[in-house]
Amino acid sequence: PFLGGVVIDASGIEFGANDPSDQIIATPTRTPTPVGTIIPNMPAPLGCDTPNAFLQVPANGMIVFEPIVVTGSAFTDNFAFYRFELRGESTFNSFVVVGGDRTQPVTEINALGQFVPSYYTPGEYRFRLSVFDISNTVQASCTITIFISDPIPTPTPLGN
Image (cartoon, rainbow, N blue to C red; front, top):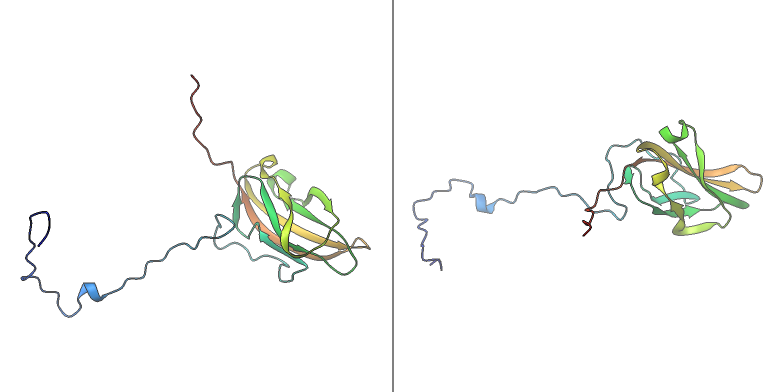
């Protein structure tokens, strides 16, 4: 009996050939990612198929609204430097260098540097990691799509 004092009589219930309690219904859930919100169906990354220039964060299609640590790998034979480049509305749709050149190779997935999106107008951008050799020639690159957005609003405490 039910502890609340009500007894449910299920004797008149007929389920038919398929008892719904025997059915398991799959419910899709979003898979959490280590990189935040990802917009699906983005153009495929360009050149990111080698560890010489690989981006883990930001990921292709990622929404970026606060400073992030760019994570990946950047190295080549006769390595000279790597850099981040950005193309979009704020850069007049041309790639511009973001944060200068970095002169230490990163051969395993690790921190490559920081990207601060607050300097740029919200919108869709191409983010590129380029790796150069000692002849100043690009030896590897990885280009992805990111979305820069305004920071998420947070409650502001009221003054007294």
